[in-house]
Length: 337
Image (cartoon, helix red, strand yellow):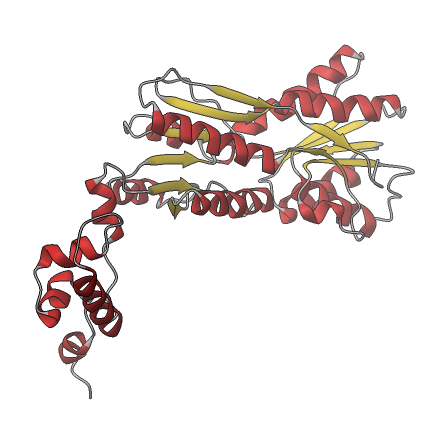
């Protein structure tokens, strides 16, 4: 039986600058200067240190070096609803843009029960900034994040607080577009699959549908609450289509709409002849031939671009006024409306 304490002792430790200095027969400060661009050091000594560092597997501590310059380059990203394909696509692109800026993201699940504990832990690090996928995070959690005193960008939910910048899609306007397209098609019997109430985009997207129908003298025939997932959309559509005579079904996001489309096909409901189905977000899967989903585009690239722009401005001028950038959605006509 292997002694666990012996295993711990056998594990290699990170090579320190002092170890390189001792092995090369130079001072600790000489090693630091060797890895500092522009710092003066005898060329022969620099080569000797670099060769020794390479042979020992030494890398300088980037976090410590960054803090000397006033920046850690660490950015906490609370990713929101990880079950949402839109959030996954958003975070993937955001991480790439942060890396290109020499920023290193710490990804935290912002929707689970452990989120509060995770925040307590991550705030022990010297963060340059916080980025929230606030549209798919509970409002109370977003408000808590706003009190940390760390530069913060909220994407998807507007946080009205000093020093916090926002990027948000015009959710209600997007749903107004979708509803008007279906009204113009002659649809009158509308159903709606909502997202969970605690998510920032849910109320706005529902309001866009309800208000547009009211302006046309109509109202929702029926609605169900989902959680922005394919499974919840499927279950909600099964109930709605079995219990109601609908000719239009608007869904709070594409995952819900894909689930609804699957349910309609199983129930032999002809889409789009008998029933129109429209989603929101325009995730990659929405354009797959198997779904060919008509939807509202919520531009990810533009959102990420705005987040990065606001982050750079905030870091350059920490005391500047808060800024909110709103994104215009647009309708993407495919084969389900």
